[in-house]
Amino acid sequence: MGENRVLEGRRIVVGVSGGIAAYKVCALVSRLVQDGAQVRVMMTPSGERFVGPVTFRSLTGRPVAVDQWTDLHETGAHIALAQFAELMVIAPATSNTLAKLANGLCDNLVTTTVAAARGPVLLAPAMNDHMWTNPVLQANVARLQGLGYEFVMPGEGRLACGESGVGRMAEPNTIRESILRILGARGGGALAGKRVTITSGPTREWLDPVRFISNPSSGKMGAALAQVAASRGAEVLLISGPGAALPAASVDTIAVESAEEMLRAVEAHLPGTDVFIGAAAVADYRPEEYAAQKRKKSATPLELRLQPTPDILQSVAQSDSRPAVVVGFAAETGDPEAEARAKLERKGLDLIVANDLTQPGAGFCADTNEALILGSRGQREAVSCRPKLEVAKVVLDQVEKLLEESSGGREAG
Ligand SMILES: Cc1cc2nc3c(=O)[nH]c(=O)nc-3n(C[C@H](O)[C@H](O)[C@H](O)COP(=O)(O)O)c2cc1C
Image 1 (tube, rainbow, N blue to C red):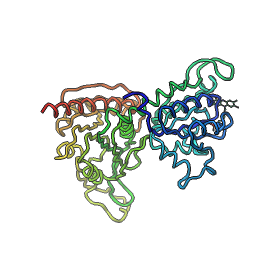
Image 2 (image 1 turned 120 degrees about the horizontal axis):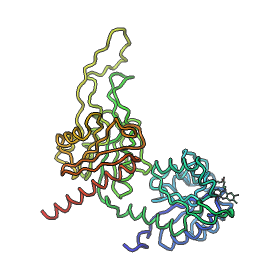
Image 3 (image 1 turned 45 degrees about the horizontal axis):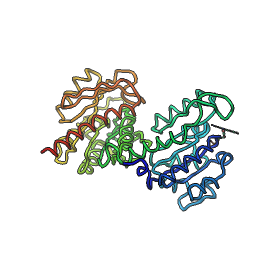
Image 4 (image 1 turned 90 degrees about the horizontal axis):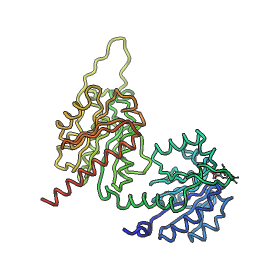
């Protein structure tokens, strides 16, 4: 596909915050319009002090949104813009705006629109070098990266303040390259046209109206998988247990509580699913009896009989609607490799991702994970401790290989 075709008709919202580099964003917007993209510009009040909205209005031929109270729309300008945007680009992204985004603040049209984003958000920071190396700013950038925001990092050179250093906004062409990469991936990514269903988080098995059996799963790994799969063009469904983390990219999500509910939701969506990833920490047991009234506290021991919950992974792997690729997770404390290999074979999975819960930085709640990926065809890939988003990329690389092999096999047969 020619580069220009990639942006033809694509819907891009550019947010301009208050830095000198705003003048360079005029060139970026002009280029995107020439590429055939549908561009809308929104500005912070500080951004407006650097470049007037008239300039962007002339470049895009569209009104520029600056004030959420006057640029009204039936649903609010922030929702209308967020619905419109396949991609948001914040350029320049000031230290102030990055701090707000890292903390979920919504006090102007740009920050509120980003909070309502349904797709990827690309940030192009620009600032004085001391502002850039400030540890608070760096912590905000790291937080945003961990949440899945895309960055086009500043370069080194002469800064508007007269000093030289890192902080100079990436050149319009470099930002455009990132836009091409993100939108190119979305339109024709390696998982384009594939349906990926992911379970995530814990389940709750209630024993009375106020108590349940559960586990500390945060859902961060499932959210990371959903986000990476969506960025590679997949149609993603996330079936997530209570309190599970949600991906920064918007994906269809179904909230469930118990293992039984999770199984029903999975079964309902299995036909048409190409890839199933069971990243949920499903409770293995549920109380045999649910007491409709709160069980009273007493001095004598309480005995509970527990029943095994349905095995979701196994039922997916053995279903008539079995997806082409079925991936499980195994959180282990013993011999993770042996335990995971046994689980892979017993349940008839294609891949299993084993975590050793005894390792620091692995497993529940952590932002990082260390994993061993094993496959039914003898694949074995050790993934050293790294952010869950990075682990998700390695897992999905393995999934893509299997999909390629299975479609090659079908064609040959
Ligand atoms: C002349 C001038 C240049 C500025 N350039 C930058 C800049 O490049 N990057 C930055 O983070 N802040 C810069 N600032 C500070 C921001 O404009 C200020 O923090 C403002 O509150 C940002 O608001 P906003 O993030 O809502 O746009 C500059 C301020 C002035 C007066």
